[in-house]
Every structure is written in structure tokens, then in C-alpha cells.
Length: 263
Image 1 (cartoon, one colour):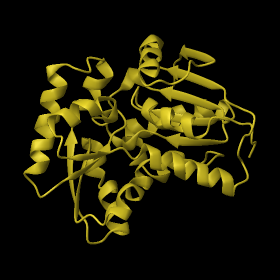
Image 2: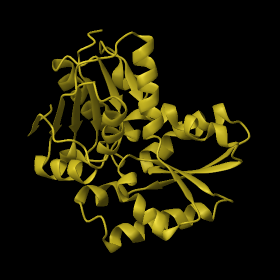
Image 3: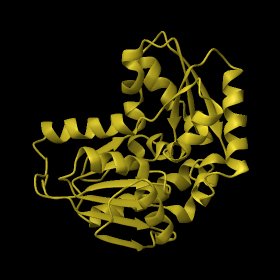
């Protein structure tokens, strides 16, 4: 593994920028290449076959960029498991795999997971948490619309508030829940809306745990970059929307950015 190679991040759109923000903060000497597939967002409403095709096309793009590893910021793609990353010459770190790390030290008896419909139907979050914490009950609710609404950019609109209320109220009807994992990287972008509607709930973003897991693995593989810091951002959609969101999330200005096509 080339220490100077970039770390790739892929997501269905702007949501993964929430992971990128934490990764750049934690690992300022690393080079990063981010690719968001806004053209085909949301991923949570697509078939497994579509997701595999799109995800592998994104990984091929990063392979051409000679990345040393990839972070799957997209929870939906993480749910595809090894079928997505088989055959690629770099390790792939999945955000879902780090979910239990967020709550394992809290000794929770129950936890909610709010994600896309595909992610919830896959059952992966439930398995990861229950394997680590067998006594913890997991209540999953899938949203068909929230990622799309966040991607559209009206972050304070009534549609987003109504969708959040619909999902969280449904979740609260299932059990005694005080902690909710945000199982889609788009959702933390509107964390302030979640908190204003449900101040009694602790909303958990697993992105920080994924970044710490990446840092640990880079150290173990002796693959840390000590002299990087370059950032590139690409999208299949409108690059200005990504740059505006990156600025909103206080991510440094990228050294290179542009719109691309993936096949």
C-alpha cells in the first residue's frame, strides 16, 4: 500500500460529506478523494442489482485514481457486503460495521435505527448491534424520502420536518427508545431539525466511529501519510451543490472538484 495514496470516499450524494468532514479533521495529513453519485440518488429505493452496478462503477473510478483504501460512507452500499468490493485491490471500510462501537459502552437495552428502506430491510444494522450487544433490542425504521429531501437542499423545509416526524413517531410507537442511530449519512446534515423536534432523544452519528476505525487500521498497516492534506471532490451531479454543502459543513476548499460520469 502506497502511504501517499489517497483515501477514497463514496456516497449516493452529499450525505457522505458528513463523514468526510470528520475524516479530514481526524486525519489532516491524509489525501482524500470524494465521489458522490447525486445523479442516481437516492440509493435506498433501488434494487440490489442497480446498487451493485453503481457502486462498482464508483470503486472503479477510485481504482483509476490509485487510492490506497476506500470508506463506504453510504449505509445502503455498506449493506451489500463483500459482493460490492470483491476483486478490488484495496481494503474497503463500511460505516455499518462501526455501528456497535457507538453504543457498546452505553449498556443500552434498546436502540432505534433510522435509515433508508433498503438498509433496514437488509437487517445488517440489526445483526451488527445484536452480535455485539445480545441484550439490546433494535428497532429499525426506513425512510423512503428523507435522503432525497436532504439532497434537494431545502434543509429547513416543512417536507423534511414532516418526514422526520413520521419516521420517529413510528419508531417511538415500537418501544421505549431514547437513543437513535442515524443510519444514513444524509441525516446528520439536518441534525438540528431532529434535535428541535425530539430534544429528549440522543441521535447518534456513526461517522466518527468509522473514521477512528480507519485511523486504527492505517496505523496497523503502517500506511499513514505524514505529508499529504490534498482534497478532491467529484460528483455525477451539480458540483456547485457539493461545494456549497462542503462549505456549510466547514470542510476546507478542495484542491480539485468537478462533475463526472460513471458507467
